[in-house]
Length: 171
Image (cartoon, rainbow, N blue to C red):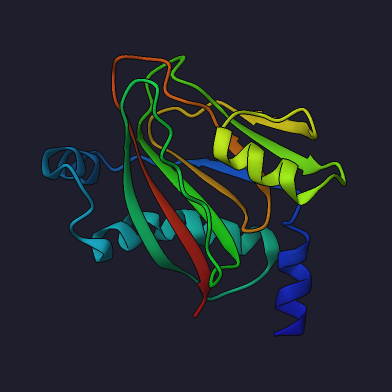
């Protein structure tokens, strides 16, 4: 387990994304307006998890939790808080062009107040330095370390932004 944790720690400042398309799964989620079959989601995600395992030379990654999210105009509902997962991920089912982006940050050592303020505003806070902006697109899976600071901008489009946020653990 120690070796696995060292390998996962390499992931701490990394963001990976993989194109992943499963038209049948996408159509079912959009039709159901939700994630009704978590086992189907795990099956769809397995190739992406396999790629991640190959990058870090580890085995046994699995989806531990998942939630369906839908952002209407001026909303951002991405929840990446989890105490039980090593890694987080987002599977973008429908991400209209120019609907927003995810800004990943490294924290400038400031007060806890600023962190709380930044999270409640859901906008990039000046006390955080942006390391990487990710612009989501349909059928993309994004992986990042559970403790990585990020902001997901509000949906700037009239079209809904649909995605599944999930946590990954061992076993």
